[in-house]
Amino acid sequence: MSRLAVIGCGAWGRNLIRTCAELGVLGAVADADPAAASEQAAAWNVPALPLADILADPTFPAVILATPAPTHIPLAHLALDHGKDVFVEKPLALTLDEAEALAARLRGSDRIFMVGHLLRHHPAFETLLAMVRRGDIGRLHHVTASRLNLGRVRTHEDAFLSLSPHDLSMVLALAGEQPERIHAVGRTAPGRSVADETRVDLLFPSGLHAHVAASWLNPFKEQRLVVVGETGALVFDDTRPWPEKLSHRVQRVADAPDGPRAVGEDPRLVPLEPEAPLTREIRAFVACCAARKRPVTDIEEGLGVQRVLEAVQKILASPGG
Image (tube, rainbow, N blue to C red; front, side):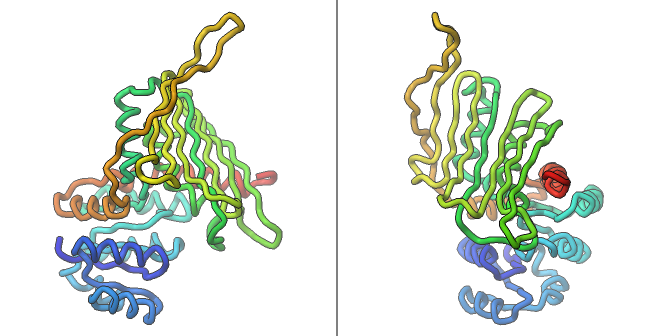
């Protein structure tokens, strides 16, 4: 693929545009705000085009959608109507019905479709997942994922819908199954209509338990995934420098005269090959389009994440949620 178009020139769209340009695959940009599109077009020496022109142009075989969350599904359908391969940023959809309808359409299509669950392409998570699948920490006991910060506050979606799709994608990849029970609680700041802080517990048929926390009102930044198994634990801390992002600790529950006790060795750092996850993600999308290969985060993976998101939304909207 020589060219693709990025639709949406907002904060994250600009990152996608820059990455596509650096990889040599950026062909055009578009945005509902002509000034925003023109600025990015000038910065990367590509045309700013109306969406209709991009969709009608066969020299753009694929599009990346980085528009506001409520537009993801309608724009995805529109792009598919015009025969495009599609990459859509998270969240895939605002409702499960929307996501299922899109999935049903794609099952009969030859189009490549990828959901932007960025951290599935992070070198630290890819290494962590390989270690878990290899049995390096034994059978999984529990997973804790936290995405906390004092940052941008959304109005269309709550903290869980906005911040946790990445974490859900990682948790579901580790579990290899959908949860059978979900518990959730949200807290909304005065004068706000969506939850600014959420805590969600997922219980899986295998016995695995996962806890996922999200907040944009936290006084400090935390982006951490802790995976505990029978014989060890892995910690992916994305706030640490590259050499310290992934650590492995051998640990277990041992018998002692006064009863069972958790014992463990000092953690060791796991070597990683540093590379921006966004670069790896876009490269993966381009490669899948070229080889006509299903992405790791395809529509079915996105649908699995959406099912959990929808269940949590219903709980948060219920009395006491």
